[in-house]
Image (cartoon, rainbow, N blue to C red; front, side):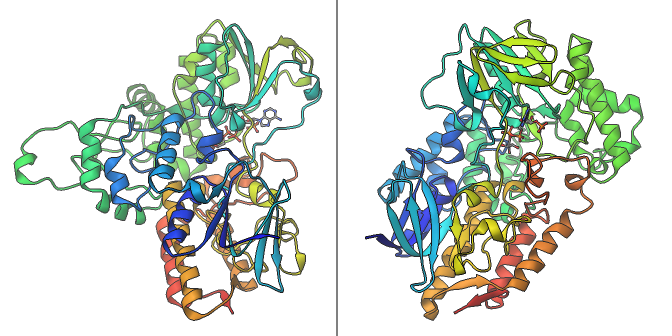
Length: 559
Ligand code: NA7
């Protein structure tokens, strides 16, 4: 006997939490299934030392409740994982979400029951839940990628993955720690691990481009400025390609006369000092080598990301890359270590930009060793460490910072079967095919939040999540009001959308042949190379979604 609800939501990260709140408010009976023991999704699982968000917290926060906006204090401009998880817990308590969430409940199959027009989710304990609608709120970076390395099972020490970090404190004191991977997770973790471990060995395959993160503590007056203007800020987010307002307290909003006379320091959320639009040299090609070096010395590596031509012109991109390399050479004491850290095989801007705190300085420590896996390949993992072509590295603890099966991983892992029992893995064998990243033809009434083909990871995720959940909520209400039973895209709308997603990504830095990013699925062997997120911009995408609804759910079949 199955439990029955109106909507099944899989996942209780920010997407699942907001969907529960939203759909409950529509009078729907909602059942949320969550593998973890509590809310938070990404921020529940990624507890590794140094984990932090790369979007300012005042923007990376929910906009659906004015009370929530007014009552929550963020201690830093860019929050660390513990503060974001605290926020998630607060949201769960404040809106009494936990009563409809079944924790420690992993979904192993999701089946469309065609005769009844219902979805059934089956859990690993054999429990089954049925509902008319199923909403996959499973996140874009939620299935950790742990490559199969020779001898991996022989290792007798502790093995951890940054994306599955334990809740209990991990004591690294006196330990010889190894870490594989230098993407965002590795770059954030490495400086913190080095502080705690007796010795840290970093096993790097591809060097990373990373720029210093903003480290500002939150100032009370900045937070207050946001609170005073939150409605305008949320509106600005809706009209920005990345879903961020770029609101600058004391500058973005016209101050009343009385306060305008008070000179206040401008606050910038960017990595570099604020400049007027006129003085900003936005083409690196226009600068001499000396000017470039001087600019980076004065304003930091993040300066390179402010040049427009770096992202559009291969020659300009290579100039930026070489300027970057020169700066890194100057930061590292040992020239051999510096050479190993220099990215040379791809351009800045092709991958998601990594932000760091003291990453390069860490390699000047005596208790940190950098191993270049291209120069000295990993031969095998042994009981006591890692054997490379150059020698054996003794380890007590091995950390995989090897990323995720991004965007499609969690959806495929859920074993979804649609009409005629077609597995989603079959439909997506050549890459993800979905309309607006919201729905798939052959899977009626099943929705994905921030699915492939939507702005998702190229956008402020909280903004993307709220927009998708609102769209789905309105759609369910519409079906109910019209006495309709089901919605799914037409095959042609879906194909046209996928073609559009590919077309807008073509010719950008993201899809250059030398680029091997998780956006393209290139980090997972055998995964089709397709640019998965929608690069056309959040605001345009949102308008398109609204237009589709205004045109009577254009491209969808409603029955
Ligand atoms: P990433 O960005 O996918 O980075 C994974 C890292 O692990 C990267 O340096 C990889 O090197 C390395 N890796 C992966 N497989 C291997 C093997 N087999 N051997 C050696 N090294 C390997 O994941 P993150 O978790 O850091 O960040 C993902 C996103 O989360 C990030 O963009 C933010 O949005 C948050 P490679 O480059 O493949 O040579």
